[in-house]
Image (cartoon, rainbow, N blue to C red; front, side, top):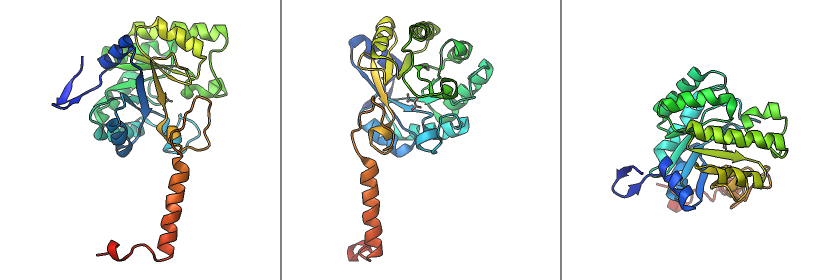
Length: 273
Ligand code: KIV
């Protein structure tokens, strides 16, 4: 099922993603936090934009995703929504806005949906946040889950290395994935887990999985756009494929501009009124 906003644009919905899993077509997801980037990514034909709390790292320069606030996520998500015509927009609920209090979780999800216009929310975790997920779903808000390396729990993990390599953690992840599906989540992000585990989970679920460091057997893939474009030069995990080196290109363009202004080359005759 899909909704039509105007005659030419067929919007991506959670039902579209379900149909893609059934037909075997891979789902593409990328992050965006602002209007201009969202407009380009949507025009390129992406299926899903994630307004990730990775904005805390790549936009605000924090070491972790923990400091970003609900108000800041609403600002980013509403900017993204103004830039898109076709894709599904999922917004992360930030750290502290849903854990341990399902009423607060529902209030946070309602705020982000109402004030930004996002189409769905993403929450990190399994059984620990079962009540929060159920309550959000009961309000008719679509929920994407997130298992494996969940960066909001980084201080509990102590490291960003691959998760669920041991049988006990892998079993817990498999049970949590089933639980999220039974609760009614429409999709699950699997972050930094062994490829064979991601395959087993993806094959056992009816809902699509979207991997980041989860290998090729996930039903879709997600990357942080700033990593894919090579803006975040120092971040080099094995799972990342860079398609550009924008850090170097932008630095070089800015260097040229500085040179042109200092040498009085810019603005020239044609560039003045
Ligand atoms: O915040 C984010 O960008 C994410 C992706 C890494 C999945 O959660």
